[in-house]
Length: 410
Image 1 (cartoon, rainbow, N blue to C red):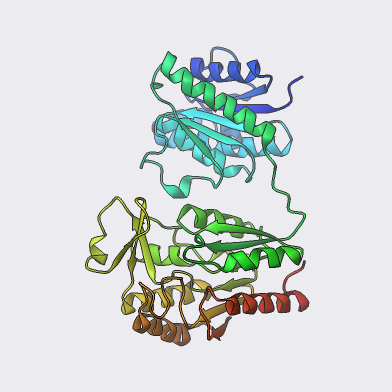
Image 2 (image 1 turned 135 degrees about the horizontal axis):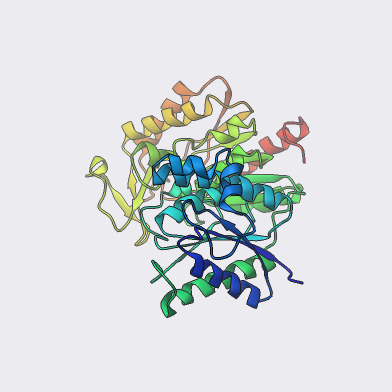
């Protein structure tokens, strides 16, 4: 009797040998296998546990409708919807413990929808000929998906692609055996930040909040981290959020590709989750360090964080635009919002005498926040820097007030 079962998904009409090889490796390691066919035109060499007809029907359509569409993109979207719906139902029924999907561009397109449908913590692996390529937009990637490049695997088995496929098969089975699924017994606080070099509040806040009976998850606000944060906020996964690093919003409005999307700073509000917000690195626009500075930011001071990431200092006018964007995103919140405005700076480089300090820019931002702050937001101006102990103390005081008044339930 196997200990864990893996759902193996792909187009069995074109990838039959490869998918069966993956299944054989999993079985050879003592795992169980369930198979799902997302083909449209052809058939597998042997029946799958979940046929292409079942997949299409799970998405409210049929294989005949996919064929009659006469369009491969339309047909594969039918199978993507169906496989996502069917896989979620099967997971909730306890049929499988982990997922592996194999594909080229067609199979990968469907795989991303399927993986998005499964909860955080379910091992999900995509073996793709286009892994890590710019064809895959960040917003299509689930927070915990794993991708492996299917090298030499466009058609048929060979020694090169077997190395990729066997690693992937072992990885997903190992993950299913080892995974510690999220335990939401303790109420969860979602926090955004950057590393301790530039922002330090989480060092004091995390243990203090844990001592109060909460669990704290800190998200690295560099695009993908913000997407994961927003995804969980949309699900109502957080008891409260401490969104103190809004830089991804600035990246988005300034055209950087390091973006968490247009809904950054909206999903906690839409789910009525209590939120505290502050201004960590509000004054910087991140861009990919090995690319040229965007023409819209040309001539502005640049700080090279490392070879992957550089930051451009915003002008006073751009900081006003950032302030307006923050207020606009928060204005639709359905739950309580407190905006903490540390008047002495929003990151370690942004201190009087610091290398990236711009007193006029900070003043312009603060003036615009005051002018634009919506009625549903409580504005607290603090005569401190975001990295000073006084900031942390005020956050904890506000948090304790929320707990004592029943806004947050421990």
